[in-house]
Image 1: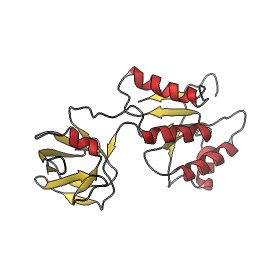
Image 2: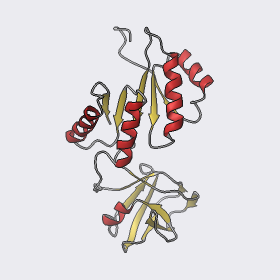
Image 3: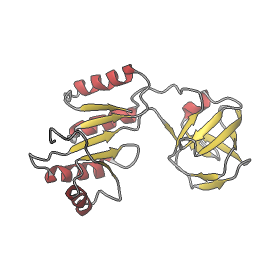
Image 4: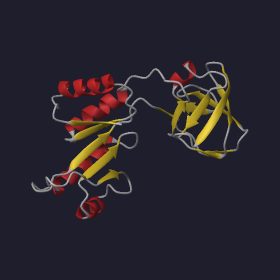
Length: 215
C-alpha cells in the first residue's frame, strides 16, 4: 500500500459479488480489501472466491482478505419468514427439538425471564417475554415487522453465557488460515481476553502473522 495512503476500500464478498467477472470488475475500481462474512454461506464458495482474488494480485497491489467470524451471537434458526404486529404473541422453541414455534439456540432458555426484552436483528424487532417454561418462550411483539430466519437475537441488558470463540468460529478460523486469509475480524468482543484467546489459536495454527480486528 502507498506509504502516503492509510485507507483501503473494503467490500463484502457474497452471492451477489463472488462470480469471477464481478470480482474482477470490483478489483478494477481500486478495491483492495475483501470481507467474507462467516455468519453466512459455505467454505466451498469462499475458498473459490479467495483463490480467484489471489490470482488478481500483483506485487505492487496486494489484496487483503478478511475473515469476519460470526462470534458469540445467537441467531434464529430456519423457518419461513412471517409478519408480526405489535401485540402478537410469538413462541420460540429450542432449535433441534420438537415443537411449533421459531427455533432459537437453547442458551436463551437458561437466561430469559418474564418481562425481559428479546431484541431481534439489532432492535428492528422486539418482544417482551410473557413466560419461559424451559421448552417454550412466549413473547409479545412490541413493534410491527417481518420476522426472518437466521437473524440475531439478544436479551436486552443481559449477557449470554457464550464462549468468545464458538465451535463454529474455531472451524472457520482454521479454514481461514488454510485458505490464506490475511486478517480475522472478531465480532462482539467483550474483553481483552477475547482477543488474546484468538491470538493463541492463531499461534497454535502456525499463523501468528494473521492480523486481528476487534469489533
